[in-house]
Figure 1 (cartoon, rainbow, N blue to C red):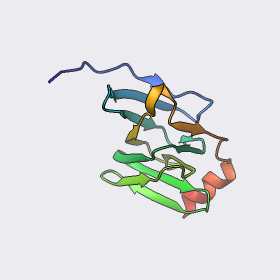
Figure 2: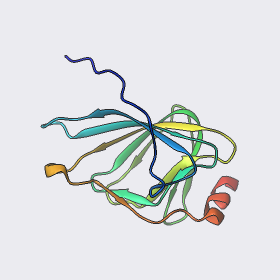
Figure 3: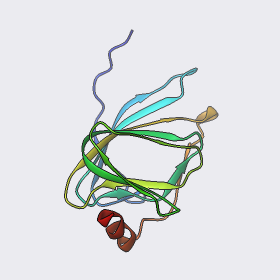
Figure 4: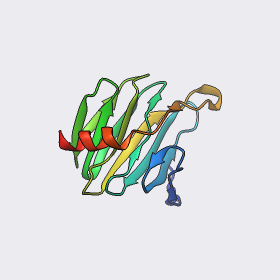
Length: 135
């Protein structure tokens, strides 16, 4: 058993997020584990770009209200306690609702040999985000 001190929180890269997003790494597995976990905090209106994960991603909401959208226009309104499973390769985005903070644990597996499991794509247009907030 090991006790790890908390990691430093850093602002999420502007190349991956719209608005202010803060990421606190929690765990990065050592072989044979490939699990990666981070606490991600979104300010009101902040969101990720479109992206996908080679082996999927699980989001567990810890605080607030947020949104998760897929390319087919499906949007989930998520709240503290909800868990969303995004399958491998599914292009999606997630973030806070327009008027509240939202935090979630982002859990995914790294790929062998240090390959990045996330494919980052373009930002979610403001019009699409506003429409998602009205659903």
